[in-house]
Length: 93
Image (tube, rainbow, N blue to C red; front, side):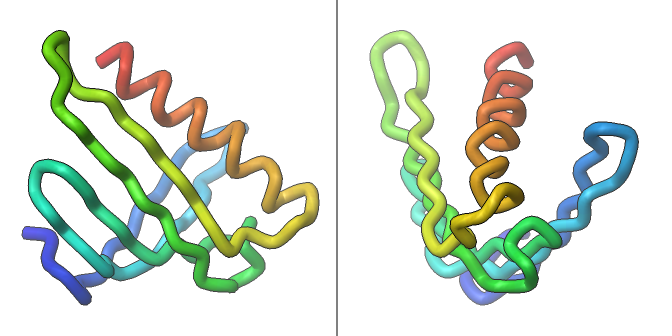
């Protein structure tokens, strides 16, 4: 079970390859908020921070995702597209 300072590894298959992602949990406030570090090839090994807020709504749950500390280069800016892709897959599920 996920816990503060617990580690995670996520392998995302996209664009014909596997993209490894690593980090550790900074905050877990079930079921409202999760915050973790995020390290990948696209962050050039730099720890960024991802915060996911999940406020309940009458018709379901709203998701707000913010990532800070991503390098300001082409790969860093592609995180926006990556998160949009992941969130759209979640919405379909």
